[in-house]
Length: 592
Image 1 (cartoon, rainbow, N blue to C red):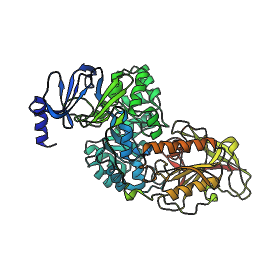
Image 2 (tube, one colour):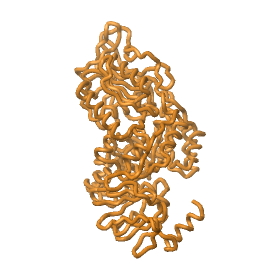
Image 3 (tube, rainbow, N blue to C red):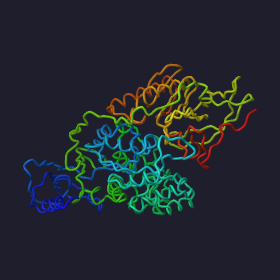
Image 4 (cartoon, rainbow, N blue to C red):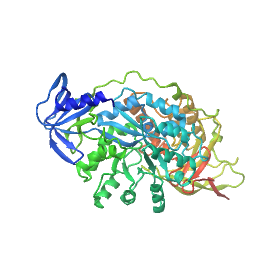
């Protein structure tokens, strides 16, 4: 900030310069003291400069907002989000999030980074210029996430991470899973040290580790986590000084259990509790909301409304050390403000971003215009072709049936249990799916360097009666993953995604019955949100009605089943991964 800007803010606060906007007559939530007060809010350019009562000088073109009978609160933040999981490039995402009161997100772009590296992250941010959505970067700490267990499209070492942490848009070192930290490898320790030395927060990925491991993670610098599934787990983290991000995404819905559990536990201090979405499809954002949904649902579950709003605003700003200019309706803070018709129901009447109304009267007040997708993001799905059906199957020598490890899906969660099932062996030695028992083929095809590597296993929980589904979104390596009742349908799906540059596909035999193109890194699209929602509706409808899958969000479930870092099993192009031991395991246990 320049001295002249400070001079102008001080003079405007004193009344020596006219205000450029005024919010009059509202009930303001003071998140610092947790109280509601009747005051006006004066804005000069992009900042709040005055909160009080009395007449103020206004510029001739000042916007005066009558908030009588309404509530004035800070705009919402998302403490941890992967933009890529919304499927929308930043301009299209802003069009969706702003009406839900979100003007700031803390985003870990490790999906794009795993595909395109540092230049991909910069390309993603270049599309965010000039939009009313502030993006702070949680610098990816694990690209690749599981070295030696997967193939990613890029590598971010200590030097690359340090350079990104030094940038003005960085807020933290992105989620670091405890397995990597506990290796004590210098590469990870250098990244942690780089963040600490720059006074940056270190985000964690701590799904229910043993207590000693949790202590070690805290001792190693991890400062927050978004993977808690129960209040007991969250309390352990809070007691060790690890902030808890309450997540409510598409397939990871933890808000109810955490909020209700923490209320029952009589948590006294909620300052280290924050709201996030982590991964949420655009369809769910439009249908139920974003952080506004978290606030509304938390209040409905019994959380004090003020604490709910603090978890979406000041708690996040303080955690990321940006509360000097964000997170509150108070002087010097950016004028990112919501006008609410209803405090408990979070009914948003208007949204201000840096002092300008960007949403009101049911409409956005900004235009994204033409969106140019950077060239680096196109044509990122490179598989060795042709993909033959037999390439996607497990073959053994001898035997009539085999006992195999099965990836058992946990509906609406990213956890994958290990099961065991007997499957038949074909005459030419290929293991066969069993649709009647919902034991299906799953394969991960390497797509960054066209090596032809394929990881193969079996999965249970998708319920496909026929055909296949495939995705180029496959955390965190983002190779192409396909699940199917037969290998021909799977091969057709993989080939189609290579043709269109990535996305989702549903196939039956040689036919593509529905697909959605995600042209930027095979992860995101610049298409309008309504087109994406309609495309997903058609796609999910086809998967349900034609292929017989009963999952609510089959593609979100498909995206996460490949993770090699979440218990108990993951799948990469290098094979089946036991994430408990962080090592490859064979899909076949024994043959008879």
